[in-house]
Image (cartoon, rainbow, N blue to C red; front, side):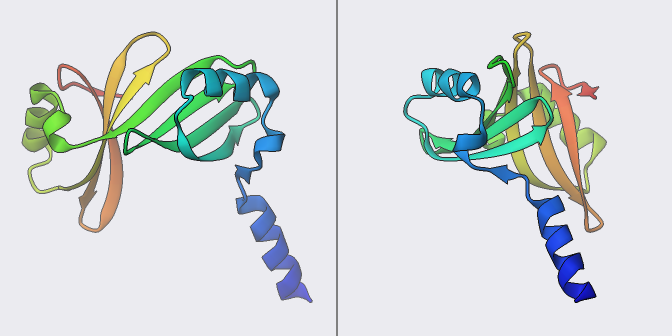
Length: 139
């Protein structure tokens, strides 16, 4: 019985995917207006005030983060290494020459700034790095 309770508790605590019916109407409306051709939409509640939609758009993996009032916070789009700005690719190669690069993404923020996320693997440990367009590491 104790194992069953622990199992149920861990399932409930780890479940972050939410049904579309649990997403505020203003968030769903803003999403559908911005991304009317999105496919395979999955929603997650990031925290008390943020909702993330993961979906496919133009054959790319995309996620959009919305505040509970329907304001778009950021859009993250999967990209290839050839789509990275030259400065970012050079900074990554210079600062982490022995890293295995796993994924790349372009993040467009609501303040119109753009950053690039790279997931690298060094010695079996995965780490996400954020760069601005000039190749500077950012938080």
